[in-house]
Length: 76
Image 1 (cartoon, rainbow, N blue to C red):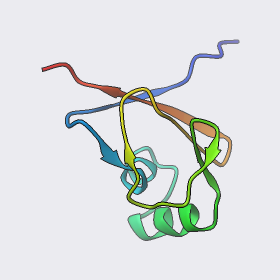
Image 2 (cartoon, helix red, strand yellow):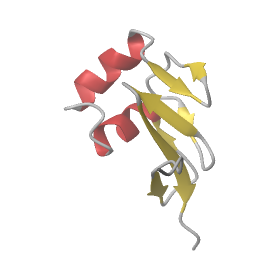
Image 3 (cartoon, rainbow, N blue to C red):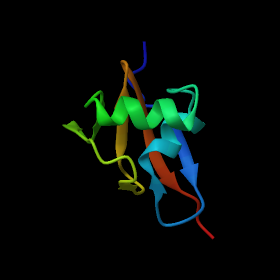
Image 4 (cartoon, rainbow, N blue to C red):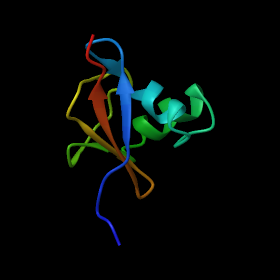
């Protein structure tokens, strides 16, 4: 059994938190993602995050409903 965290790659220097939830199917829509975040159900790097548009950068680990994903940056 592996403890490796799944990853997602971004092209820019950051991605807004709610977009990660939507993109990684942790939420069915952008609206649902924003609601989940506003309810304190999302953690970034182990800390509860309630800012929907938080700038999530490479190295951040996003956790929602028991799922985790690590943000990586695509090298140009």
